[in-house]
Length: 341
Ligand code: BMA
Image 1: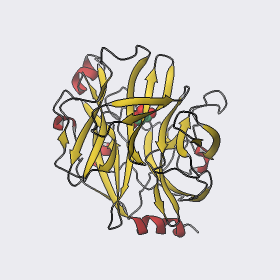
Image 2: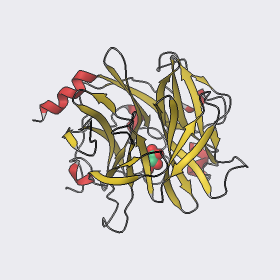
Image 3: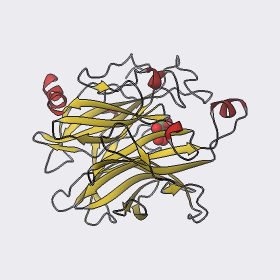
Image 4: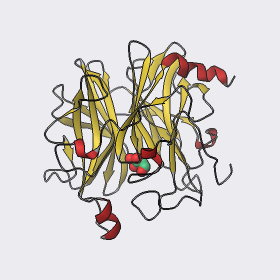
């Protein structure tokens, strides 16, 4: 694996909307950055659940060193999943909530899925003693959220399959084994549960070394889509060590690049990879993804929806600053797996 990876190109069947579909100034409450959003179709509309970091801006961050004062998780709804987002007046979770458990720092990277009529959130959960992957149930009116379970640290990027498989819940996850892999080299695992509380039969699924354009870490992104050929599954992939990368955002230095790839998992045993597309599917290449924002060169999908007409919508956070949307036809995505054979 070369230390410096070449310029990357995404798949030509992906169509990115040229402008973000949600930016900080759209929110009805204080917001510096809005990103990494889960989206679901629910009760005839699209529901987005997104992260908002607040309490500073670029100038105060760079010149005064003022950090963000909080992170919240908010909800917005839209008729078409693209525009006209209507925001709930307050976030559903806030890191400054005076009633929160003092052990908890914040939640982020929300994913949402409906299984057997219930709405579940997967969240990264930052605690005083490490980062966990959390699963919570969202009430049908989308107003309250109840924590069901969380992993031990360090782990995150939990993603639930949208249905039980073999009678069990199945999730993808990304533990962070810092001792045994030499440096950050984090991989995707899969586990099963009878009840969303007890997780077991953990299986290694995909290693960072299996992804030709990654040299740092990979992780699950969005609930997989069931297709005739298998579970269509996105993942994010990170490369680093390109010393030509410098500031790239608000921080003094940000040298990582986040892209997305895809694989097909066996319908009955999703711990088996049926096919891995050996090139990146989505890479940061639009201005908003490469030249502006909190952390540039980051695209981070948390939702993938299949429409009745075969269109796949991929929602992703861009530059840790706004929410963007890419679309592709399902048959074109599946054809990419044949291309490599
Ligand atoms: C990851 C997560 C994401 C974020 C990404 C890039 O570790 O924290 O929320 O988008 O880093 O900063």
